[in-house]
Length: 531
Image 1 (tube, one colour):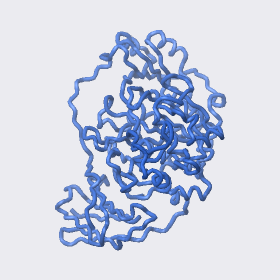
Image 2 (image 1 turned 180 degrees about the horizontal axis):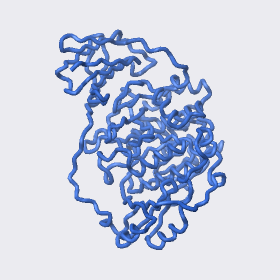
Image 3 (image 1 turned 90 degrees about the horizontal axis):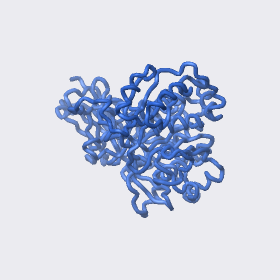
């Protein structure tokens, strides 16, 4: 056995920043604010006239109430007062009983003093789509086209007649140019499966312009290259939302929240978001699922919508490295990228855990994908494209399990992944597998290695080193050190070339290690250390 690659050594990092006290009133004259209100007393609401039929069906299917107070509109008298005091009202949130407004600094204290105002939060920030600039087509592309769906076990879904039919997916992005004409989406247009569109930047229905990132993401869910599927959910329905202005725009998390409420109203089963909010608004230690967009994602999940979001592309950025928000939200299925040529973590894919120590990412897919571009086809890098590949898988999973609660579906996707129950902060539980999702529970995987402790040396002895070509990562051995709380202290991946044991000197382990976990050829075992 030869050491081939150390993916990372990632204990929980503590970031310390010395900051001046923050003052709500020291913003620019055109500052944007999220103004949360106290109540909706006396407001009337009829879910049957407000919601799309599929939104009502989703609630009934998952045993959720048809509506609750978070669905009610805001009080008209409160809105009238705020209209008179704010410079501009840009929008409202039913879910959080809030108003998004541009407010002059001299008017903020008076608004904050209103009895019905519960909290005011500044909203100016930077958002980025989690993709990397397209490269020119290469001979690698057609091979990649087949690999990216096969790696998720797509042939098993095809054999079972599962293609996401009847599942409605909302995509949030920076634009969808030429989706209304591109050959990759002809089958979707012919069957009128783009149900609604909305541009939350310009407040109109035209999303078929601007940045082509959304076009590429849609193709990774449901596009076709001739008769070959680019993504797994070629039979799904779509809601297309433009929430961002350019490739790395200054924008508001409110657009994401507004799009989520719109998606809920219009019957979305899944939200696919390749957007991340990081620097220029947050610090890494704030990635703990408490941002507005993370709260919005969790609220969407509470409405029965599966939210799938990119981890981000900061894995090689020493100043950030970790995931962005809303990938840090508890109820978000966060997606990392793997390299299609090596089949382990692709270098730019952001790492977990969250700043609060929660396990992220959840799953992974190819971080380089064949996809539709503004015109024609190409390939591109980014967790942006791993995310819609998983969203297509999730749509097929929803079609297969129509009555599953959203978090039940979430965990079934995790459990279908090829490393499960092994987990690390680079790969999550690995790549979801259609065959596992479709199969009945199988017998325990036979041991592929054993442990042997001699003096102060722990040996991991592999029982065979023959690569199983049905499973691309079968010649990789994953191992990690954990403490008594089962927190991951360090983790690595090595390639198995021979049956020569992996040797671990105990004095080389961190002092607080209590166990060594190993995954190899589908088998997981743990060696407990008596220290």
